[in-house]
Image 1 (tube, rainbow, N blue to C red):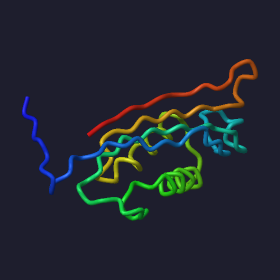
Image 2 (cartoon, rainbow, N blue to C red):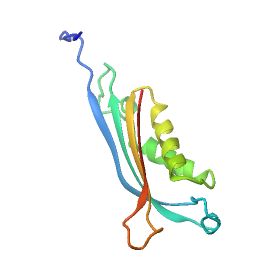
Image 3 (cartoon, one colour):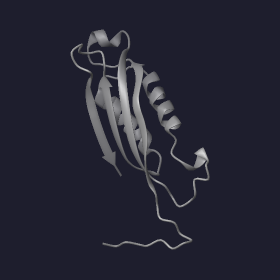
Length: 130
């Protein structure tokens, strides 16, 4: 195993996990005809594994992967029009996150909340890494 010990002037890389929990948004989603004529609630959870580069954060949003950027991106994906599959929505969210070079891996859960009254939600989880 090749491990490199950082020197005092060369800090170790830091790994962070950015979280978006229980984002509930209306979405035009589904393969059935009745799902094409309105929206239904989807709950989205995202966990982004970030490897920070060596520059210090310096209390600046410019130096971190921002959850605001990801939430805004999710809303833009949903606003882009009807999506047939929860798998498609999850994949698009994963691609959004991986567009940032500091993101090492992403886990996304997308659930339809209103499909079955006797279930808390149905959906899919996707995990991808570089």
